[in-house]
Amino acid sequence: MKIPPVKGVRDILPTSFGGEAEAFQFVETTCRKLLEEFGFSEIKIPIFEYTELFAKGIGTSTDIVEKEMYTFEDRDGKKISLRPEGTAPVVRALIEHNLMETSPMPKLYYVGPMFRHERPQAGRYRQFHQIGVEVFGASSPAIDVEILSLVHLIFQRLKISGLELQINSLGDAQCRPNYRKALKNFLKEKLDQLCENCKRRINTNPLRVLDCKEEGCRRATQDAPVSLDHLCKECLAHFLEVKTGLNRLKIPFSINERLVRGLDYYIRTAFEMVSSNLGAQNAVAAGGRYDGLVETLGGPSIPGIGFALGMERVIALLDKAALSTPGTDLFIATLGPEAKAMAADAVFQLRQRGIKTETDYENSSLKSQMRRADKLGARYVMILGEDEIKKDQGTLRDMAKKDQKSLNLSGWIESLSNLFQTRKP
Ligand code: HAM
Image 1: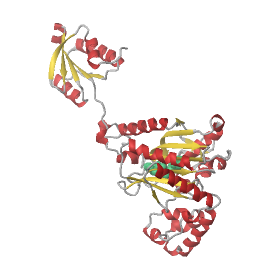
Image 2: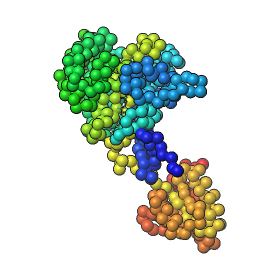
Image 3: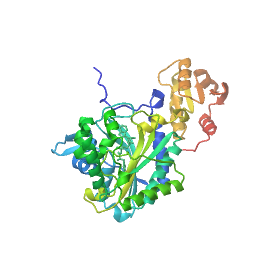
Image 4: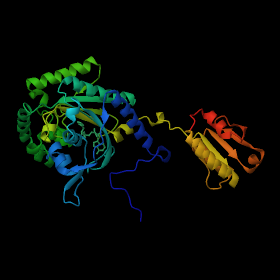
């Protein structure tokens, strides 16, 4: 009996098998390059952590911690969770290794799988991949603008258009309690119109009610108070500067007063890059400022800001036709054991010189070897048969031009190397 993959988890196949592995590579390479231009360095964080890290970091009343983490006891009886996100692990690493002592403003990024037990649907998986970015030690709104400009440039480089950068301010420890109170009072009046989940959230996490997808809840909260109307002087000034900075750089954005995030650590600036071409799961990247998180996780009081993009959703928007995967340079078609032995030697030497070379291993007919060469996108095919060896002349076929010429077999590897103009081994 065949064993299927876990629900919501998928294999990412190579393009040649109808998959998207090369698209993942393209997104990763493009982002890495840009991130390095922005002064970021890669951090590799563990796939699993003590559950407590996420409970404390993301918040015990969030959906992620309440019902989406893959949590288990390891053989030492310790509670472990597969990482549902990367920010809390990066903060843990920052504290663990005292990174602030080495640099006043660590700029870190990570790439890899995250795990959430959500209901699978288009654009929502239980194992998905993020490229995440975190900056520590900077409380200035100029850094918020820099991070938002990075988000903007990533999508520009990936040539993905039709996106909207939405921003909001969620206030801070000074003004959020007042806002929460105002929102709670409003929601209590609408209790009978809210779904069961939101009724419960009123006390645990009222801001999340604004993000509920249920039609009834959306209608009931149409006129709900918004955090922007409850910001303290400092948060308001911060938000104004972020907007001014974005305008100065001519980065288009809109204000979404209802934008709340599914993770509790955010304060002040929160944002999402959304697409109108993705259906319900429309955020391709999201993040914000989290100034209290390092302290919450046992470190010093250090501000932080970052975001993560969801690679699956980005790839769904990518123009895959623009991603060309280079085919094979050379296919050596052989007939007879002597030719096979010569080809094995040549394949090794040519690969040593960086030439993408393939050959036949199965004593296939010349016709089927030519078909395979064609499928591999070979630029040239070298035909080596008993006759050719006897005459010391192979046949080199240019697959695009569909013409062929003889190639002297003494020094043929040199001749082929010159053809591809590659480096010597
Ligand atoms: P998040 O909004 O939970 O934030 O996730 C960021 C992005 O990951 C989403 O916008 C989406 O593109 C993608 N994503 C999330 N869940 C799924 C899923 N189940 N399937 C496919 N894609 C998904 C965070 O994770 C924060 N740690 C971001 C951050 C970094 N904030 C500050 N620094």
